[in-house]
Image (cartoon, rainbow, N blue to C red; front, side, top):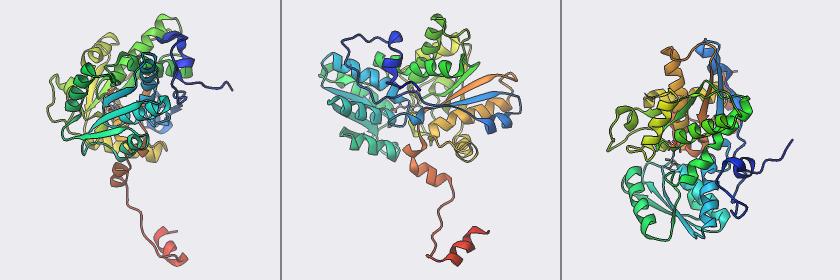
Length: 352
Ligand code: F0G
């Protein structure tokens, strides 16, 4: 088996790097594309369903693909510090890659709306973590202003190198599947990833690596659906804190991706998200965070509505690992039972 060297080395020809770019990598990418037979059975329409499990990246989310590029380019230009606003995963990736590069990271997260695992990552990697008494959109506005006026590189997805790195997700799907899928389903928050995937598919198509192009289908949480509703949401609400965003930075490009690919955007309720979250864990053995489950919830909703032709090949990006958000997992499952250290007491609980 060929050794993997991270997304920049593997897809160098498609990325804006040179021999002079110092590559900062945690050997991200090469995540598994896992068939989902139970989900496919449930759809009852002979569909091929695959899960691109981005939670298996080094920091547990797809953000590592973009961050290896953003931090490498920051270093190339002599930057000694990076800053971002985040619902959690970007901050975890920024902190880890900054640590790897030996530079500072400042991260701003919305107080009370960041999953525990993500916060612990930013902290342990040594980032300066600020919890803003406000939401993600407000935090992003602040860090954009700071990065304009101070010697610190913004590593949110408005940094063009982030999307360049993230488009490698689409390359991998094509390499793993041997073609592009008919549909690509993906959760939408700040709308960078849907934009990046579409760019990746188009570039691979243009380079003759695949003959097909997928239709891009995005899902927002019903309480945080600015693109679907076509207006800014001042106070977004959803259990999927990763996508609790009311004014996405890549709104325009995401709309273009949908239009160009003849795709669309839909919404899923928190109830649908949590049902899909449990189903994925219990029936496919895959533990992803609630924002990722939004995609599965969307699949279930749209299959019921007959939106996909029988026999279609569908790829779902599962963006972040379930361990990021242990609180939601424990709230969504039955609680552990405490027992005394005796066989009879244990047996009484097992019902064997
Ligand atoms: N899924 C997860 C797990 C995420 O962390 C995010 C975004 C998304 C989906 C949506 O991706 O923003 O490209 O549309 N998280 C950002 C963050 C906002 O700060 O970690 P998007």
